[in-house]
Image: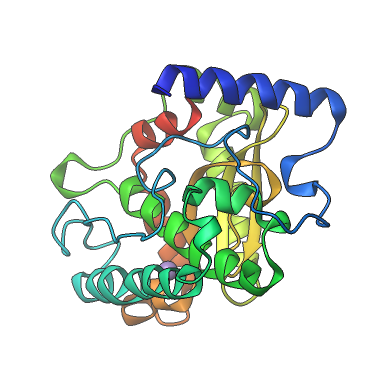
Amino acid sequence: MDRRGFLQKGAAVMAGVAVSGALPGALASAASAPVSGDALLVKPDAVLLQKYPFTLPALGYANNAVEPAVDAQTMMIHHDRHHAAYVTNLNKALETQTALHSLTLGELLMSLRKQPAAVQTAIRNNGGGHANHALFWNLLAPGAAGASAPSGMLAEMITREFGSLDALKAQMKTAAVGQFGSGWAWLVKTATNRLAVRGLPNQDSPLLEGELPIVGIDVWEHAYYLTYQNRRADYVDAILGRINWNVAAEQLT
Ligand code: MN3
């Protein structure tokens, strides 16, 4: 299916979901057979379309490209070791689950509760970790270009939902700083096509609840401790200042 067909199919299904009031993630968990998420709304980005065996995407910029917000050593360890470990462990968990090898990462996450109980935790943690980090690297604006400002439909939705970009950033910061322990702060598109801010634990993907990730801020200590130690709020401010809103806008469409 081409990109347009993929999107149209997803939009049609999500419209049906909105009418029924049930999110894909709230589907019954009784079925044990692999369930394709092809009928679900999945953002057609490269990593969400990966199937087993999953691979670590390149960072796309130098380790120091997002300094001073993210120091080069943190970037290297975070991508080359933490993100790589999620990919390795996801592949290990699914190695013998051959019936799941036809599903994309996005499909695995959106149909998690219908997958075999033995691999649900691995998909949730390592599949979520893979998807979340792949988006995070793309959202960070490298080099002198710096961060952009939202435009087009995303800008309109932010104004309608939050009043202003600064108000959205304030909500994102509250969610990020307030997330107890490890997790992420998210800007998501809900099943009813609205924007919302969420704080989710660990590597839980918004896709688990049928919500589309637009912007994610990793607040695990491994993301910031070398530079910021316990000053998570300062790290969050720095990340919010380096978001590439053009990339965020691409997640909407
Ligand atoms: Mn991380």
